[in-house]
Image 1: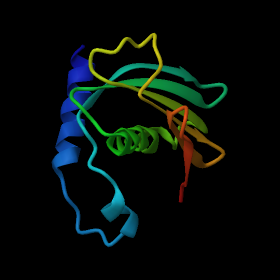
Image 2: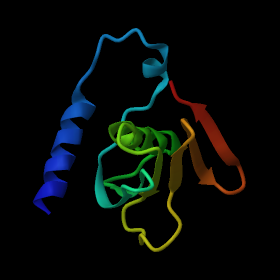
Image 3: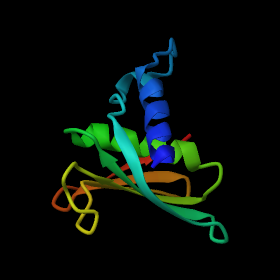
Length: 124
């Protein structure tokens, strides 16, 4: 529990920081909303991990994708495949996530709505 609180506080501190970056992608990204990591299931042999996160308040789809990208960026040096399931407050982790994000073969894919499909975002 202390670990989860500490991680949340660190993430909140980073969310409040600004940079003078001229990276055009940084301008287009949504701010990362407050969330907590509920569980992580690493498979070191396969260099893969599954992470469940829960938002602490209401979020948009693009904010949820930004949070998942934040989690992926934090782990991509250690894992080749990262799956992030993002859940809204009050929704059971046994159900479908609000956003399902995956890093595979250097590409991040977000699935947020079965009817609209996926959005592919190339990584650098």
